Length: 456
Image (cartoon, rainbow, N blue to C red; front, side, top):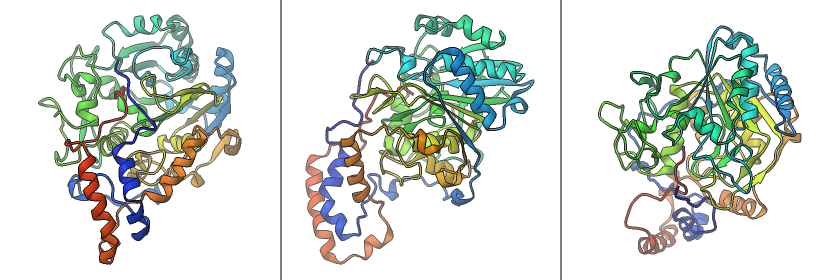
């Protein structure tokens, strides 16, 4: 697969804007416009901001030193108990678990995928065992994989012990590749209850609708286009590549979703719900966070489980440059997807309430978007952390050079506000000079190349 660049030292358009407008920013109180202008944005009516009243639920953290199966099981059970247990949630129910198995299965930095950019099979087995013991009637493990072979064969080839997972789940476990309809005769349609930021609804494999309980089992990682990827961003992968891939419609696809979802260069196939407003920016920094928020609202998460035992920093997969292994040695669980991801974001040294375009978010902050809709709070001060104290769990992912750059961006990058237009004429001089420079360095295409291969 084609490899791309993430968080590299190469100057992209946003960096040119920041550096070129530095002087002008000082004259306008440090504010700079977003790369996409408000006149380009979708004509979706503004929603009331429910961030301050968004619900909060506790998040549990457990230290877990390795993927030894009995240790993982014990630590996961302890974490689940800290948030009140799952018996009432899953007893007698069909539980669908969205795995985070982005891209293809490769070694990375000499380590297997499960110890770097995929959820580890020991965590999957421990979760299946916990669900079985809590009385789940059926456990369905799903992911949209870029393979034509049966999912069991793909995972076994990648080193998974499927028999052990089946045994852990009381032989109630079903696996399905949800890149297409799979075992179902048709797709299900999930509507965004309040209308959506970018899409009003999505067509998905029916397991995402026909389940009583939905679990997002993800890896603790940074992300090239979303900033961070945990339980919420994991749901980007429920969108079938057969309908949203680069060669859609194609039930036998092995393509990613870059052209259609990230860049907006293709329309969805006929009969699939399209964008609310095709005038919305064709920019991944705008689109990816909004799609994440829309999908999470369309298919709410009942339980979030985050594998942070071994992972990577600097990106989400093997296609990102300069990623490297890191061992936070943590398991995190919560019932509210935004609260859980807010704690995870804090654990890896970032601010879950960061303004749009502020590090670690190259574009909009999907946690802010979700909080604004009332899904859950991203305010770490409003979230109760149980188990390992938050301060003891902190494991900063940013390298020192990146921390310095983040501080610089935080002090320079601002969103344009109406008082910009009240400036004296002298404030516009450097802006005009920079605009002239910008027109001579920018690409003739209006969209900005995404930093990776859009694996999910």
